[in-house]
Every structure is written in structure tokens, then in C-alpha cells.
Length: 221
Image 1 (cartoon, rainbow, N blue to C red):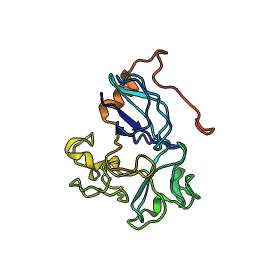
Image 2 (image 1 turned 90 degrees about the vertical axis):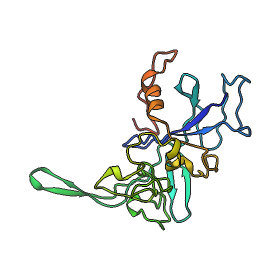
Image 3 (image 1 turned 90 degrees about the horizontal axis):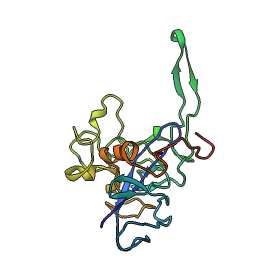
Image 4 (image 1 turned 45 degrees about the vertical axis):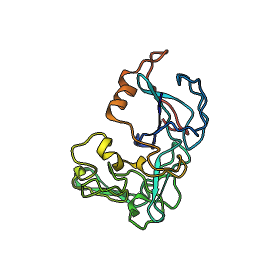
């Protein structure tokens, strides 16, 4: 039986569930019985040890952190921690009451010398929060590269009218690329489909009756 493993990205301030899964490979360091019903995963290839069901016969793992990209070297990686995020280091103007406003200085993340607002094809820092379907593969839309950004029309990202980056459009999602600390090979990882998300959050049953609960990560709720 072939199972899949998923890698998840979690950001402070916003949940960036950029789930990436990988098909089982013979050289993976995975335990379990021959029927594939019980797995004893070890923490390798940027993934966490916990298992989550995304269908009645499929379990997945989450990544150790958010997905990041460095344009100058064309390198993808998972952040070291689940709470790491890039953010923006630039000042942000916030509109106040009655037309007044003020600037909030340095709205930034935890990744040193990295800034999403400096995004470009040659940027040597790290970025995250990519547009949908921006793996770098030409999907037929205007914006398809990880450094692309557009604030006017979100529909310009990814293959038009598609909700899951699968089948003919599988190369449009980030897991099509080799992730340096997540297997380091193409098509080793992928995002969750809409149906898998629905099963994970709404349909699956657990022995405790609880599918998800509030948690504190690195001191944050």
C-alpha cells in the first residue's frame, strides 16, 4: 500500500497551511509492519513525527516549519521552527479614525536579513507567503514564479479555475521543486487537496473525539 506524508507550514499571526506531502520511497527511514497500517516515523527530511489522517486510508506528516524560498540561488527550504516566518521589515501606514493615521515601524518576522517586501528574481534573502500556484512552472497565468506579487487581482495566480494543484497542473505547486531539507528531490512533496483538508478538519474520527484543539507554540496561542 502506498501512503503519503504531508508537510505543513504554520505562521504566527496567520495560519499558512502550505501542506506538502511525499510519496513513500523505499529508501525512507520509516518503520512499521508490512501491511503499512502502523508507522513509526523518525524525524528526518524536515518533517515532524506526528501522523494525521487525511482520508480513511492515508496518513501524513507535517513539515518542521514554513516553506521559504531564496531567489538568488533558486533554493527552497523548510524553516527551522514551526513559528519562524519572514514578514516585512518596512514601515506600514495604518489608517486611523477621521482620516488620521500612523506608521508602525518594522513589521517583521523571525528570519534574520530577510524581508518579503524586498521580493525580486535576484533577492538573496528568504521569502515566504507565495501566491497560489507559483512554483515557477508556467501554468498559463500571468504570475507563476515564487517572487511574483500582485495586489489587484488574486485570480492571476495559479491555473485559472482550479482548486487543487493536481493532475495536469501538479507542477504548479511548490512541492514540484526540490526542497533542500525536505527530501531534496523534485515531486517529493505536495500540498493538501481541498478534500483532504475537509477530511482532516471536519470528517475524521479520533479516539478522544477531538479533531483539533487550541495550542501554544513557542509561547504564542
